[in-house]
Image 1 (cartoon, rainbow, N blue to C red):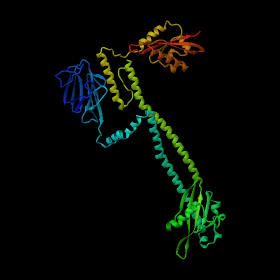
Image 2: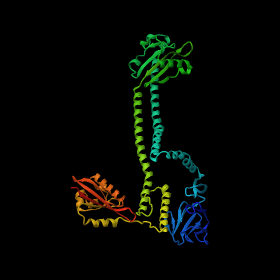
Image 3: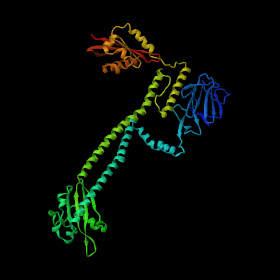
Image 4: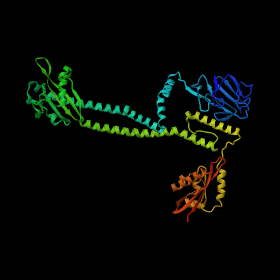
Length: 522
């Protein structure tokens, strides 16, 4: 079932239920849906409903029927389309498929004293629709609240900054951490081999208490990564290196390894203890086991504790810092580029709409026509067209003149004819400040030729950008001061000239052409 909901004008808030078949709407009493509004014909239009299809037809009304801002005789319409008649704007709503329910909110009154219209977004029943609804109304509500405090550009920058940090934290960080863990495991394995070599060479001598036969030379002479080591018995008395002979362990890692190995039971005796001890060093501790004939099992006879600082560890730390910095810089650059793309893609449609609205009001365009694909903003475009069309209708009803498109051509031609009898350098510009004509004296003075510069902007053709900016500024001043002449001194070809700019105003009171003259100062 279709409905007509008045969203603007005298009947705002009124709903008309459309039945299957023909629905005649007008000011007369013999129609299906009478509306008492001035300007509406007795039989103004009919809306034919055939299942899911809805068709509007103008019945020869005096003031016409408009669909989405365009005058129509007949046209198929769908839910969401705007149908305008004098003093009323209807929106057609398909009840069964609608996502947007338009309700009359009696408790809230707008500034004009009329009932306000409230739009409620109903959650869909499908899973994807529910997720989109939740994101839009729950998650985005937080973003919307920030947008009330910060400009869109600032808020977008904050969002992208959070994205950059999150991206680095969730992607680059774990990768670098995993690489560090792999390297650490390799270093621990190599340290365990060192410890195992010490145990293999010295378990027999330690079991016999023959300290003179202990051999740790490879740790002192061959293992370049080893910073220090301590080989000690179960009481903590150091037996190697010779410089620490018969002293007790005091190194923090050695003490920790000693307690952990001997206090952890049989399992600790058979595993390698490791720990990152700071300053890029790794500590490796291992019990030295020897076969005891009395017990028939391997028993601890000593402990080796090694501190070493692999060069690969330091290199990896440097590479990690470099990788973090590189990732940060690249992500920031990409984030800035993405910021610019998103920001200008969202603001460009609004800027184009603003420019086109000004052109409509100036009589240079009949309606808004966005040259880009942006379906989300199309309803706004249609609404603005409806408002502009309604403004035209109201001005016509009041006896006023709605300015139609007025070309620059006649005004440019008038100034061109005037230029033919002029003495001295002269230029003629159109309303967009594009070069239309330059006489020979003007070409010699400015260095611009009409044959090549015609139809181009001063900023693109003038060699002196300061000169171009000065002329454009004078044009704006003249246009904003009812076409009166504006002047300013400027140096050209080494001489001082006074630049005079006057403008011709159209019926819409906007400048249609500019007349630029140059007078050399004596």
